[in-house]
Length: 358
Length: 116
Image 1: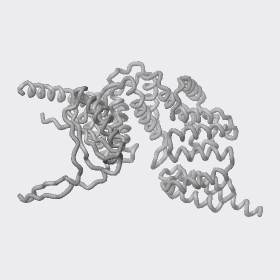
Image 2 (image 1 turned 60 degrees about the vertical axis):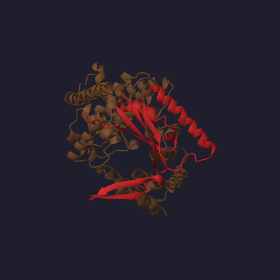
Image 3 (image 1 turned 90 degrees about the vertical axis):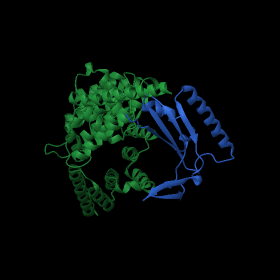
Image 4 (image 1 turned 45 degrees about the vertical axis):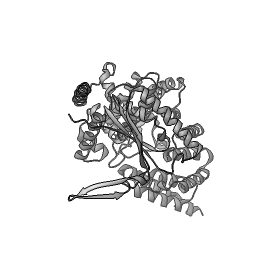
């Protein structure tokens, strides 16, 4: 009995020592964020896997990764999420406490454990990129530091797991997206949609790099959602003009993606691609069917924007205008609102022209 | 670290009493019990009688109050538990994933508090 108690004591001592080390590691990491990709100590890789552990809430994973590995200030992360600094500070400290108290390990998962855990890290990396690329609310601005951080982490994961096709997939996807960034805003800072972008502004060297990485990924013959999205980006980049886009292949790829990720946004993108193959009326029917099956669509801005555009292309201007109005009503991003207003005016002009002809 | 795995399930989900499926489930539990015991990670593990047998107790202003039933009325009820000794949460999750009820219920894993 005494021996048992002694062991218990010893174990508690060890546990305590380990926790103290973990907290120190988390704090030290925040103080120094090395950016030399060829010289990343294993300790930092272990940190990524701890920060992106699936036992943490997804938003906390993103915030903690930015704080711990990106060295971003709590205030800056709070701004990215439109939270106030104290709320974000609380979130971060809750996440750190869970890591230490629940015994989330600082290890690089091995063998069969690596793939799912890597998946969680890749998702966090892509969320960081998206947060930087297109603000989810407020004034639109490309937050380059978030994009650069995501790019750095994606490159790091490719180095860590050279045989993981999805790591390469997410890196290629980010590179394709960054390549098109210069064309995404007009000189006045307005949002420019893909079909209206000046393709001469796309960064060809980034596109070339993205293509090479995507080819490497596909040669590993392990398909995944990031690779499919990167392949869709590649097809957009292949087209010298918007009307040369291979929509049939893009539509097929979205269908493949939907088989893996049954989300409304994938379905929506598939139908938009399909409308360029089989016509606006066909896609419109499918889109209305989708609304019938999914109540959430009522408050989903991209749905109404897509619906409006299909109505407009099908010549049903009254419906188009009211769908644009609904999209404008629910968008939270200033630049998106300006873009939707421009589309609304365009639909109204087309309607007047049609009436003039009648 | 010690972890407690709470086994939650709705009574109408999963195999019902006196069905062949229940036999399969019990067999799965026997198999996992063996695995847990052999791994040395299992410190304790019990199934509980249904919530109809539960009595909730509290003392307020020195007065003992007894209530018929569980503390919270939820669809999913606590049906049993395991206590494991593990190095990390990952190890505890790896064990919890093997509890057969995970297929139709929910397993909650929590570290046991250590008073230093």
